[in-house]
Length: 357
Image 1 (cartoon, one colour):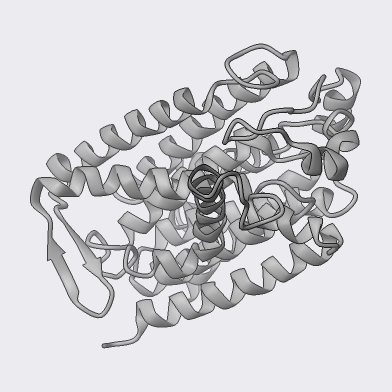
Image 2: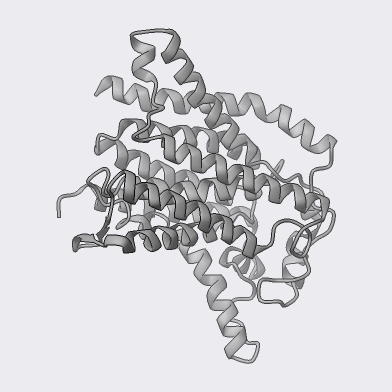
C-alpha cells in the first residue's frame, strides 16, 4: 500500500513542478509571437450573433495567448517518460515507480496526445485566422469527425483486443451490450468532448477537469489499477501547474489543445475503470462529469429553444457559465462556484463507485 501511494502521489508532484518550470518559457514564447486570436467571433453555434459574449470577452480574446493547454500535456508526458526512463536505468525502487504499462496507461496516453495535437492544429489555425469557422480553426464538424474516428478505433481495441463488451448501469449492475459497445463508446466520448466548451472563463475549466481526474484517480486506486491512478494523478499535477497561471487574470487560455486532450481522455479513463477494472466507471461518469454535461445541455437547450420558439432564448447566453456572467456574476465567482459543484460531484461519484450496492 505504501509503495502504491508513493507511485501515485510522487509523479503528481513532479508533474506540477515540471509544469511550473516550463510555463514561464512557454508564456514568453506565446507573448513574443502574439499567439492569440486576431479577431473575435461574430457567429454563434446556432448561426446568430454574439453581442453579449463580445461585451464580456472581446478585449481579452484578442490579447490573451491561446494554447496554454500545452502546459498540461507536455508536463504530463515529460513526467511519464521521466519515470519510465528511471525505471529502465535503475532497478529496485525506480522500476517499481514506473507506471507506463500496456494494460493501463498506453491507451489513455495515446488518446491524450492525439487530442493535444489535433487541438494544437486547431489553435494554430485560429491564431492565423484560417480554417472553417468564424475566426479560423477546424470547423466543428471536422473536430467531431476526428473525435469520432479516434473513439471508433479505441472502441475496436477495447472490444476485440481487450474483450470488453459490457458497461455498468446505475443501480442495475452490468449490461452486456455486445457490438453495441462500440457506438456507446463513441457516443460517450463525443458527449464528454462537447463539454470542453466549459473552457471560457479564467480558471474555470482547469478546476473542473482537475476534480474529474481526481475522482477517477481514487476510483482506479481502490480498484487496484495503480498505474492508471498514477496516470490520472500526473494529469492532476499538470492541471494544477496550468491553473496557477490561469487564475484571474489568466496569463493564457487552455483552448483546444488542452480541452480536447483532457475530455477524450476522461472518456477513455471512465471506460477503463468500468469492466476492465471490474468497477462502475461509466455508471458514475454522468455524476463526476456533471458540470461538462450540463454545459453541453445548456447549448443544446438554447439552440432548440431559438429554433422552435421563434428565437426565444432560455439563457441570456449559452453555454451556462456565460449566462451567469451575463446576469452579473463576476468571472471569478462563476469559476469558484463551478469548482465547488465539481468537487461535490466528484466526491459523490467516488462514493457511488466504491460502495457495495
